[in-house]
Structures are given as structure tokens and as C-alpha cells.
Amino acid sequence: MIDSRCRLHDEGSAFLVGLRDMGRSVNTQRAYAGRVALYLAWCEERGVDWRRAAVLDLARFLRCLVNEPLPPRGKLASEPRFRSKKTANAVMTAVVEFLRFATKQEWVDPVAVARLSDPKYLHWMPPGMEAGEDGQFREVRARLLKFGVSEDTYEWLQPQDVERLLGAATHARDRFLVALLAQTGVRIGEALGLRRQDMHLLADSQLLGCQIVGPHIHVRRRAENSNGALAKSRFPRSIPVEPELVTLYADYQFERETVAEAGECDMVFVNLFHAPLGKPMRYGTAKELFDRLAAKTTLTARPHMLRHGACTAWIRAGVERDVVSEMMGHVSPTSLEPYLHPTEDDKREAMRLVAAARARG
Image: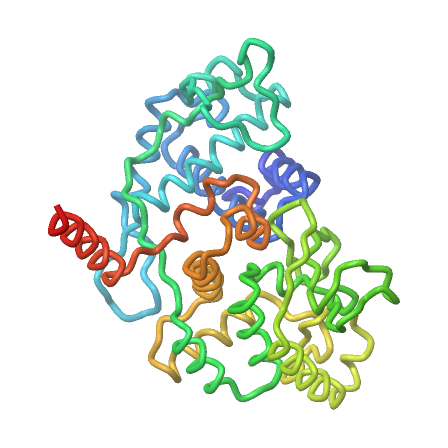
């Protein structure tokens, strides 16, 4: 992180090193770097010492995030664009975390930073967190400066949409990636972080030292992945897969063997069609793939929508919620709530059941 004179910003750079040491993903580090840089630049432009910024200063910064237009895209004049309140909240989350880091380094007054949050009582305790004999650890600090925003509607892809994406994919690797996300519900970062040793696709994996019966994959967090792919959860998990996915993986292996450079890489997903050949596939390449598939099929298609669809399918099939949470890699059971998508048919059926009950008296 550098300042306006292109000098290294010591405190900001130290914060990013701290994020890396805590095992945060490369994408998180990149996002937080930009958000903290916004705050530091805002302070410099307005003559505010970021180390002594008051609550009112931060409130002004939060308001400026949504009121000031974003830089224009391209050279052609266009309508001004503005950040959403949700995006502004995400920026403020990073800023508050930076300031809390700064208090530990004694760069910022801890009393001033403490004013940025209010006490909040936890009725549900996350796994591994003890409430204490008198419940003293149930009280945490909740961020004070944030906009009230409505919850986003989760988007997911129906099975027929997934089939359209698979039909539009021209390469075996791409078909396998789409099918993997749709069937297992793994995050795109988890998929790109898979290694060949994680693919236990035989009926019996005992020769690999694994006692799990049937074809499955293992999702493990590895901070050393050169493509920056990182599993969100620190807890490893296994997910069973269907024979169709095993077949698609075999097709991909035949395709992969045509690129000599790919034989030197242990990652499952590698570059086969552009330089650097054989190197681990990065998130940007996966995004470009989904952008192309979306354009071909006229669908809105993002990797996470396949995750939503997998979770929705399991819930509708009557799978127990704790099993779904385990396969999704959720730490909190409440993380499952946004994935429950009642359809218009579900709501109509609810009305029909009530009407039938009334008719019976």
C-alpha cells in the first residue's frame, strides 16, 4: 500500500501483512487493501489525521462513500455511478478492522476505536466459543457505523439452467468445473484449490489411506496455493459425488494429458488453453469462463449461484439440515437460512393446505 507520493504506507502495509499471517485469502487481502486505501486517501484529502479520527469523521466518510460518484469507466461520458449502501458497509468493516489492528500496535487510541461499536448479546454461540460460567462471553461488540440495508434475494440456477451451461461449455475441463460446483456446492475458491490427491473417485479409497466408502472429494484449506485459492472454512470436509461427475473428471483428464506442461502441476484445475500453460487456474480465468457461458446461454450465471442451487436441491429433497450444513462447510447453522428459497408453488401449496383444513372443519 502506497501514499499519494508513491511512498510505502507503513501502517497500511503492516495491516496487510497481518491479514496474510492470519490466513486470510488473497482476495480478502486485495479487497481490504483497496477499502483501507479509500479511507486513508479520504483522510489525507480532508486534512484528517487517520490516527485521531473521531466518530463524526468516520460517519462523514461513510456518507461520502455513497454520495460521491465513482470514477467513470472508459473515455466516453456516461451516467454517474454510486456505491451501494451495502458496499459502503463492506468498506467500513475493513476500516474498523484496520483501526482495531492499529490499537494493538498502539498507533490509535483504543478508547476512540471502542466508541465505534456497541455491546451485543449473543443468544447463539458459535462452535468452539464458550459462554462462560455466568454467560460473560455472550456479550460482544457490534459495529455502530453502518447503513441499514435490506437482505439481498439469493439467486440460484435451476437444474435445466445447469444443463444449458454444460451444453454451452466447449471444453471438458469447463464442463467438469460447472458440474462440480453444481453437484457438490463447493465455493469457487475451494474448487480452484483442489489437488489431485483430493479426488477420491473410486468405489474404495482404502489404498489411498481413506476409510470413506464411495467416490468423494476432500476440501482442505491450504494457504500455500500459488493461485491464491483458499477454502473459507478451516475445517476439512468430504463431499460424496455421483458417477456422472466421475465420468466428467475422466474426460477432463484425457483433455489435460494433451498439454504436457499440465503433468507437472498437482492442482486439479490448470490452464490448458492460454499461457501460462499447466499453471493453476486463477479466479479471474473462472470468472471469464462464466461470463462467456452466461453470454452464450443468455443466463445470469455466477459460480456462487451453483452453490445456492445445490443447497436448495438438498433442502427440497428432505436432507437433514445438519447434513446440508456439513456438506456446505458452514460453521454456524444460521448460515443455512438464506439458502432456503420458497417458490411460488410452495406458497400456493401452503394456501391450499390451509383452505383444505378449513373445509374439513
